[in-house]
Length: 274
Image (tube, rainbow, N blue to C red; front, side, top):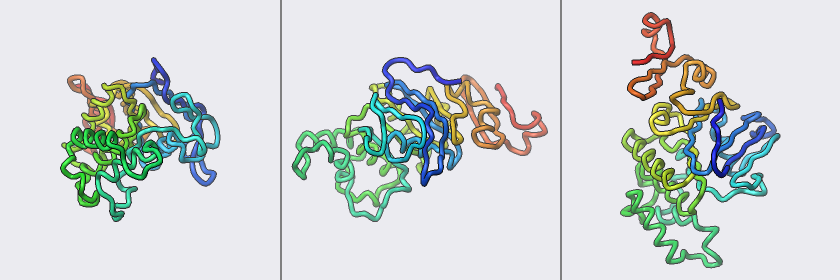
C-alpha cells in the first residue's frame, strides 16, 4: 500500500526504530519521500507523529535502522538543515521576544560572525512577513498575538532558512477553521513552488481535502497513499483503534466518528457513497 516515489529522494527511513530512554515509540518504519511532495502524517496522540519529526531533525535517539535527509544520514551528531514549525503548546510564551526577533533566529546560523542581521536578511524577513500577512506585528511580543498569528511567525522563521524540506508538527492545532484553511492553502502554494512539505495533524478531513499523500501511523506505518484510497474503515480502525464512518461524495472523502444512531441504519461503522 506504499506510495511510489519519483524524482530525487529527500527523505528515506529504513527499518527505523526510535524513541526515548531506551523505549521505542516507532518501530520498523520504512518511508520514502521525493523532493517536492506534500505529505501528511496522521494518527492518535502518542502514536509517534512527533517522534518521526524529531528523527528527521536529528533530535531523538534511533535504536535500529537508518534515517536520511537529502542524501545525508541523520543522527544526534549530524543534524540536517530543514525548516521546522513546532507545536505551539511547546513554546514558552513568557519569554520576551518580538516577532522579528523570532523570525531572525531562523538565520542565526547563516548570518556570519556579526551579531546583527544583514540587510539581505532583513529584506527577506519583511518579504515573508508581508506574504504571511503579519508585517504590521513585527515589533510586537509574540505572546500578544493570536494563535494563528503565532503560527505564521514560526512558519516565517522556518521559511527564512530557504529550506528544501519543511516540517510542521500539528500546524493547525488550536486555530479556528478559517486560519486552518489559510495555513493549508499557504502550504499548498509552497508545495507548488517546489518545497517538500511534511506535516503531522489530527485533521483527517483537512488532509483529505488538501493533501495528495497521507501516512497513517500507530507506532508503525499502517497505510500510505492517497487519502481517497487509504481512508477506509479498516485502515482507520487499525490506526485509531475505534470505528469511524467514511463518506465519499462528489469526489470528496469525509471522515467522522461512528455515531450510535448510525449502527441501526447501515450495520455499524462503514463506508457510504453519496
